[in-house]
Image (cartoon, rainbow, N blue to C red; front, side, top):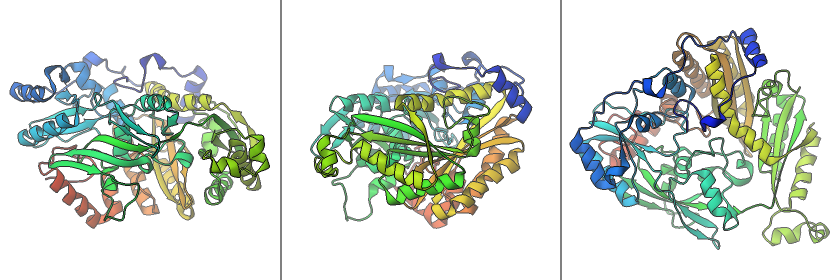
Length: 543
């Protein structure tokens, strides 16, 4: 992972001249006044932890697993939001941890939490480092120092139960490795967010991640059937059965808790049989309203495809419905991406009306599901515009963050944000976010797509591009504050799948109200009385 950008440095890209000219002519984008910092020029704070504490940490995990080099500290500084990258490009490493500590077992995690509680060392659980909401930026005030608790050594598939269709993983397994390990058993998780190449399973759970195939596989929190969690106050073993009436489900308390209550050391996840076929196709609608109505009809009537996504007019025009590139003067209307996974139909399936396939556990064959979805889309005004190879579309999605890096280098601020609401509230929420962004940023390009659908509502995912001003971090912070207030006022949730972190903390408090905040504070004070876990993230708690 690049320290001041996204992903593999070899995949970095530059914008074509015609795009640079378009950005200048339409938005006033100009090259930044200074080149980006080099790794050697990043300003880091002195290591605050004294040698005796560093030796104590090494006593738990081994000297080779306590890292204090410049590169290790920089690579574990903040996440991958646009403000995070802008600060790093400016050479600001002020939030760097004092050390990176890599435990190799649940027992070592628990021992580290006990040690850090005693010595008042703040602990930031670290998976793939892909947070885009300030989830890896701990407060130092009142602590002897800060460590990044890198869970990369906890990277094993522990067991596979093909009868219950449950697999147990350690939290540091990266998503591609999880799919590779499961493929050996003919299985899949089916969780493919844009961060797929680098994010970890523990991070998915801690942030309530949602992948592109959520219509078919569900969100990541839907997949979690059990958790093992180390907390400063002791261990938690959660999930004795798929469902239970034994009081509130404590799994839900830990899912989305972003490391502030404990450290996930094991996950038991629902898995499914790997599909034999995958197919993606594009449909065009005359307007975002018409396309939204079509997606609602599918979500409520079924059957659902695996992927269902609709770009608005701006996103379609610019070309981000095909996320691998910007193509000025793109297609008209609104493009939808519809994806299917499953099994081919046999002659017997057709003869018995698919009943045999369903009974055999293969579900509705892909052709039958596709036909049923197509009937709804066509009835709602959709026009098919051709198939897209699934691998091509996924490659495009994975390349989109590299496009952001190129835009930042060109002098444009580009950032994403997301929300969700009920179908009846979605038009008002869409308008509120757009107006807040345009009102705060002025001349900007604001794009949106519906990324995840449910019977009762959907999520809206926005991308905004604007010219950087003299202080682009402060510029975006003002816009973010305006948007967050608009989302709360319009009745949406402050986040659908990015998480809360520091960036959404105050809006989240407004969303759940003072009683909700008090509940979280009470849990925090019981599980982490010294407040060492990710201080400043998720809840405004001071200990």
